[in-house]
Image (cartoon, rainbow, N blue to C red; front, side, top):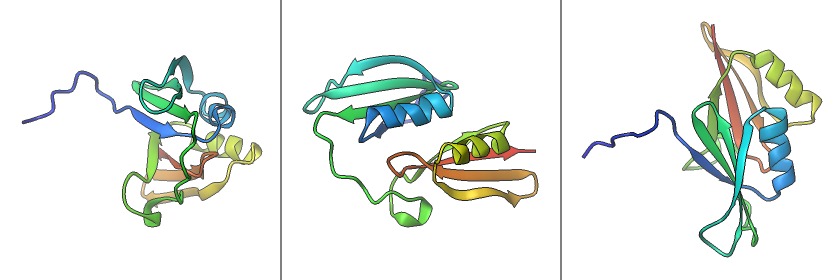
Length: 135
């Protein structure tokens, strides 16, 4: 079987500890478009804040009963999903805005190979967000 995609993007759900700080980071700082909030259809209740990131949907899930926090961290911190990558055109500006707002920088602007530069920050819950700029 081959997956037959109906959308040329991947959506991701991120369970957050606090809606206000998560929205301040993803919506206000990074500029993702907040399109709706819905009541969580599974679990003991909560709210899913839906934000568009290009063609991808970022689902910030705030459960009424917040589960324990994972250890956070990036690639070396453990198995499973470790970070989100956004390919951008304004890496220096993004990283400067993150530093200005007190966001923890995990990897400062770094050229990882000729013409490819990255920067990595931690969101309010410790999840890593990588920004990649080509050229």
